[in-house]
Amino acid sequence: MSQNQLKEELADLIRNYNSRGWSPATSTNYSFIDENNQIWVSRSGVDKANFQSTDFIKVNISGQAIDEFAGIKPSAETLIHCYLYTLFPEVKVILHSHGIHPVLLSAREMSDVVFEGYEIQKGFSGQLTHDRQIKIPIFDNSQDMSFFEKELIYRKALLENHCFIIRKHGTYAWGSSLFEAKRHLETLDYLCEVKLKTLK
Ligand SMILES: [Zn+2]
Image (cartoon, rainbow, N blue to C red; front, side, top):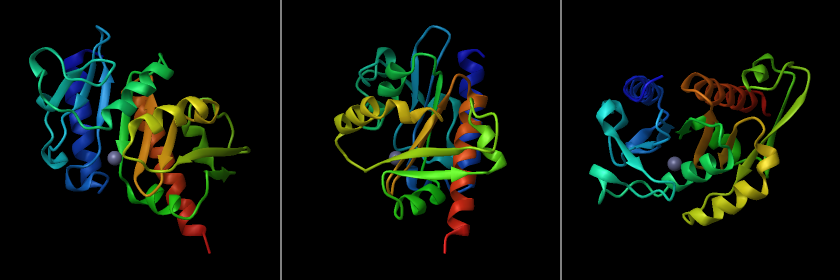
């Protein structure tokens, strides 16, 4: 998919997720890598209900805005996107949600959340059956982005389902295409909703 197509489709998805309540009060961020290996990230402070394809800015792998966007301050969380692209070179799209289900669940669980037996587990690439126990890591929240860099490196093996949760904050999910990243994020949200509803 070309850069322009991706901008249009991702902007459309961002507005769609906003209508689900996944990005209140200008929160959350989204990024992709285009055909020239350039990282684009959603501009911070934009109301996601009105997010447009022109609201992406170019950043380098250190999370600084470049070229015609130089001087614009990207969201601090842009660095998490950069760490993930470094850690997983095959990744092309990263989605960050503040959807309420993982947030509520993360307030009750410790270092990970376990799911077992749900058909939708197959929504995570690499999972071929419902009949397996899977774990999604939960990281504590922090305003110090280097904390996440260390956690991601240290717990890389636990990121096999292409997503993680930040406690009382939100989720990150990624993929080699927009379609795949979307499937991973929605699979995680669904599983968290089911788990919350079945907790006593
Ligand atoms: Zn966030």
